[in-house]
Image (cartoon, rainbow, N blue to C red; front, side, top):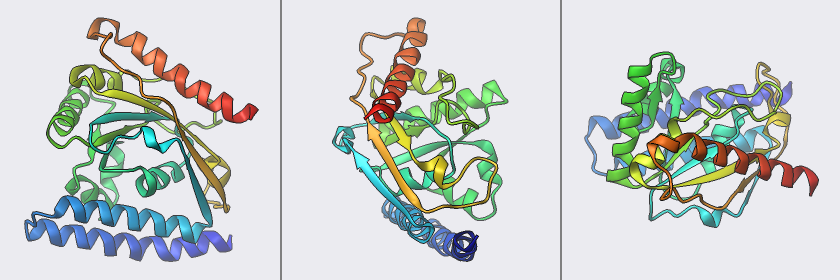
Length: 240
């Protein structure tokens, strides 16, 4: 409970402070807004993790190529996942987040201003339009696009079925898919609970999957292959 109080005390002013820095850069039409966004996101996420008592270990992060665009797909069981990736994924990145995040005061606007992408999974036309925005980001800015392909956080920690959007995006742009598995975040903060525990969160990155042999007609095969890769990473950690 004490840790929850500490995080609650920190998160609101920290969010307002870093979001305001981004807003000021947008207002000034600063040419450095991309750098400002990256610095603010990493500092904001790192501060909250530190206050929460979360230690992060990155494994095999060398597969993230900060000079080339990639699509990163991983399991999702906790809000802590977002903070961990925002703080520690190497290079420039953008998240594809569900539309509901945009409604969060201050935070939602700052996320959009930094080029992160909202997707409305309840509206197919809008979801496709969001993927088109992500495609343009990959082609123009070469970031790592981070997507939680299950579409929502898992209640049990079990890996759910992957939606095809991330893999359509990869096939359209020809970029590799990097599977990853996050461990320990559910023990820090479960879905539906406000209780925060200190702990260790590990992120293990798998080897990139090249998409050259896939087409839109067999995108389901790529989706299945990526899901199996994430599942194997989870099993490897559980048995190690």
